[in-house]
Amino acid sequence: MITILLMLAALNTKAQDKPEKIDQYCELLATGKFLSYKVTINIDYGEEARVFEFKDKKIKDQLNKVKSFTSVVAAMNYMGSIGWKFIDSYPITEGAGAAEKGLHFFFRRTFDRAELEEVALKEPSVK
Image (cartoon, rainbow, N blue to C red):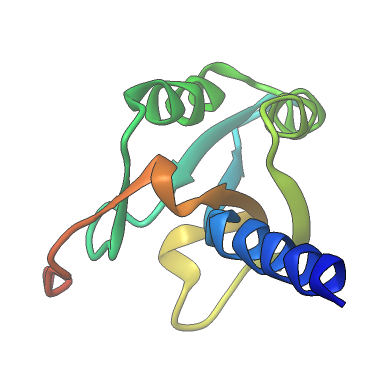
């Protein structure tokens, strides 16, 4: 009986030691270049109004590197190689979002809370 209680206590301690996981999202926007098969790629990881910031600045550098690609496939392969999982994509061609015409790709990556620092939520800037 004592052995069982000790085992349960050990399991409970291990469960509490598990770091909390937090999903972070980013959007890749690919817009076509005039008279070319190449694209311009931009990345949005929520810098305007973030709740969490990456402690390791290398993550931002990796995300910003995607802007150097001129192929959607190359950019998506790169995102997968640095741990981001593809969620969904959609085109915007007209309407309210027409200023950002192109293909939008959404990615998610799960981080340990220890990899992120909490920051004050900023109000998004109105343009």
